[in-house]
Amino acid sequence: MSAKPSLPKKLPASDNLREVLAYNIRVARVTKGWSQEDLALECELDRTYVSAVERARWNVSLSNIERFALALELEPWVLLKSPAAPNSDK
Image (cartoon, rainbow, N blue to C red; front, side):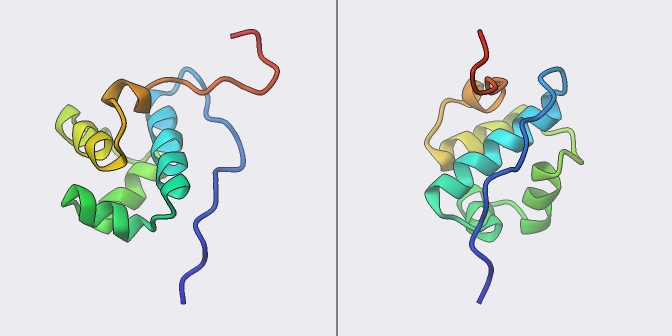
């Protein structure tokens, strides 16, 4: 049995778009209760690619951002929006 997906432990650097994308994809995936494999199947992408994206290792094409957004039922821009820190003035 695989471990239950967990939310990221820290916010991404707001000036690092790959980290922001990785964070938002993981939060959305975990919120749905999906494994990386589940998301990969929904996006028709390889699980190792999803893993690399969630670790901010890859530059992701717009087409794949759109695939992630469609699978996660989000607008693509939401995946690129930096999350606000708790108690921030943003």
